[in-house]
Length: 303
Image (cartoon, rainbow, N blue to C red; front, side):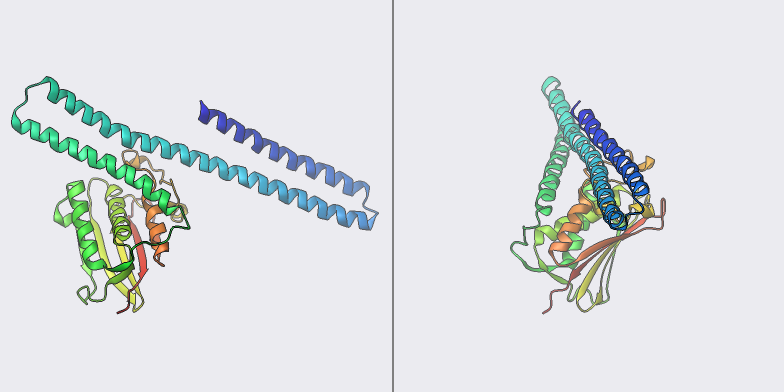
């Protein structure tokens, strides 16, 4: 009910802005036609007319942006609600079954494993929301900076991603520069960098579909930068969405992605962490169905 009311209010003011622009155009054009002989008045009238139109355009643009933001917020709330409600319902169902039935020990252990998995999913969702809040705070700087071995960090995150998604080792392949990890160090927060790398891997896996084939490489484009490249062969990204995927709450709309769970915060967090460490992140895709490559570049910690 609240969402409908909010959208109705935004639509009302959007229509009002368009109507005011049309009225201003009509009044000023009429005024100019009636007073075209008076040069000075005509000059200032045109300036005044331009200012009014510019103000109306800015107002309308703001309203359109608010509409999009409102829709993104609604999508985020629905996604988070689903991410919280589903594991809670699963845990409750397993607990009720354990309470009512005298199950064999093997089945009990399986239920315990499933409940622990659901608990991890709940914890990850809550942590994602908290990280997004910290990432959105521009005043928050890096904490406890230290040299981080990116080579080892990437390997650890790959193992964690395989375990979480129950993938065989060959589903995520790793390739490193020929220096065997020497000099692959970044000055920053170990926890933040682990979050960024894991989110990149998790995103690539989720959008790969049933046939997961992710390629990870770590290299040095030059002496001052380290580049982590995560490539998948999944659904791909339309060209118009390439820059938007790093925005907060943004999720690519695609029919084949209806089953993909998430909050739309993963890549936003990656971008925020990269910027806080003096780096950048960007995506490349040939289009829908042709996979996606995301690159995160970070300043190399010099010896």
